[in-house]
Image 1: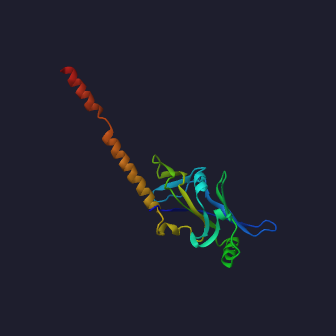
Image 2: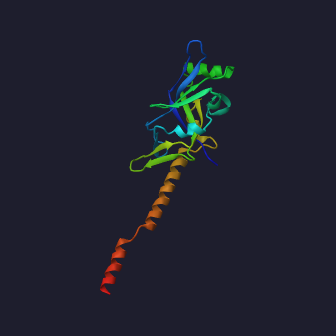
Image 3: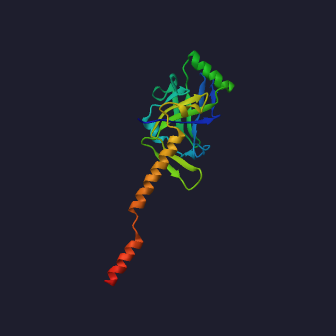
Length: 205
């Protein structure tokens, strides 16, 4: 089963209304080259262009609190627009004209809801790890799939949600992969001392 990962960014959302148009929710779901706080032994950053390929193949939804019962927009319907710029992954949502959506917009305007979040998976994506520093740094070069962007009330809760990879799992998987790679290198590394000794014996013979 492919597990999702969830990340959030604080204070990157607002409501705007152009003259004669309904209110929109705009913000950034992710910022490039911005190191996260430590997450179970590592920090993380997202490289510019990390969403380029995923945006070509994903039909991203805009949800409230990552809840599929509260759909604020959908990429294929033209009600949510996602773009990568120099800052990060920017979204613009045209919410539906429903009471619950109007309530969410009002809460954003008041500042009661102030964080953005996005859900993705790394299956088919590319990541790099720098273990020469402490804590280690994970750089996401490209995500495999992008599922949704969401205004959220409690941005930390997805860590405990079923089907979502925790930071602990991510780091433990990386450590296991490092251990396997190191074991392989040790097995394959030639014993130059033994080779020299054999050559010396051959010359004596």
